Image (cartoon, rainbow over all chains, first blue to last red; front, side):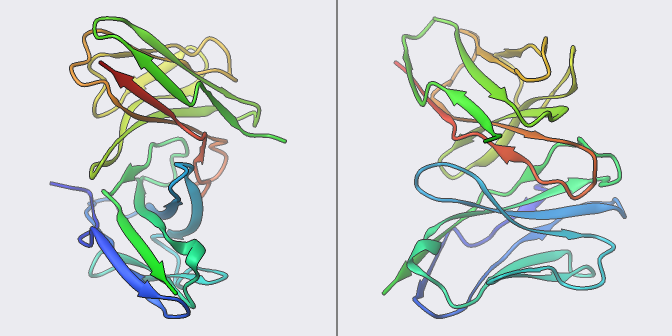
Length: 117
Length: 114
């Protein structure tokens, strides 16, 4: 079974609109961390936001926020006020046993976001 | 500036040849990782190393080998045993000091084998 599932291969949004990228995860660990990365067409991977399994508040970083629903095992990325530069592929990733630093991240297959003017 | 350098950006090889992808970091990070990215597949873990002279296989290690003789360097060799080596390869590192430390990635090497 996949550990990270991103069900939207592609999403389309207009500038200034908000968009939600879905991510569900599967783990039996109580301690884990969830990450979102952005990959523009250049190929670099840009870290966006992190949510720990014990964090009570949803994480926010500028225009990015994470809608964390632990019981449903979902960690959706919300991008507010989309910009043309947000067009990229977005990956959700998980680290199980977060208290053991150096554990590898497991990635989903990604969602391609296209922002139009 | 600190960062991760992968070279070369594009690499072309003939089938049956081994090829080594370079990854160097000057972030003083202990842990380093190699991922492979194929279209529609996301990133899949090949090998990772948490400390010098030690490394572990990831999900798709067959046909690959690594070494970690220095903290700064984690080269990946794609051997002729790898059945489908054409892909985008990403190297990453992290300091491992805290549970929420993100991976820092290089800009990747696109390998084409014909």
